[in-house]
Length: 337
Image 1 (cartoon, helix red, strand yellow):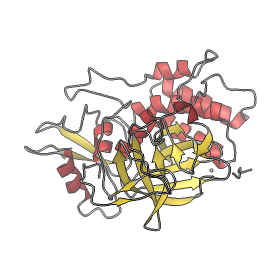
Image 2 (cartoon, helix red, strand yellow):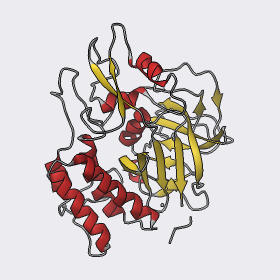
Image 3 (tube, rainbow, N blue to C red):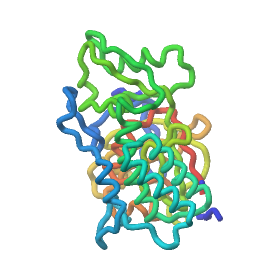
């Protein structure tokens, strides 16, 4: 491993391609699943909201107990270390102040610059990344994942008999190049589920195509709209001798509860202790063809944050279920060393 000195719609499986390394690829399409750890809101106004508050995020960025961990990978969220460069410390302090003052869009922009600049500069301080991820989650809960946020969108009035699938299709008509899945609409509008809409309701639908950036050195993944990071996660990457291959991929088939088909062996069903794929699989395509790579969950949460996979990007089940909902088929995945 080299280190640098940076339509969610249920489908019937039409075909199954065997994947030799990490998982099993299904017919191109999009799936919907439970929103896992996302913000959850009742359609009536949000009595079940589970968003991280701004105050909570600032508190999370304070010195943590020795065993504190915001991720399954065991990275503690503590105070900035003395080794943090002064320019990064300044950006972190600015983001914290913006978050505390309710300037959520500005905080998200500052944290995006901080995180992407950190990995682009060849740094891989995962303790700092965990701390910034906690702050980012609080900022984006009130900006990008809030219908009142100031992000590019079009307003749609729900019609009688409408579904998010139908709304998605209407939005995509005539918008060449836009990729969108219903899970984005659910999360951005704080809906309890994909069916929690009613005639006359006004929805804001995103008009930017999301993409993924994966930094192998830092073992961190970023869900982005342009240069804005809307969500970030710690990940596991390929082990020594079977390292994850850098490159530019696109999301292919998405599958819930995937079967694992290792090369030269019998398929291993979902739920079997020998199946390492966890609860979700998002295949990667390269130049229009399937690969043996993808994002997937894990039956061993301690493996997140490790160089342990057969080349795929491993996430906690909670995190990959979130990603599964909001990343459309065809989205770009940039994997950097």
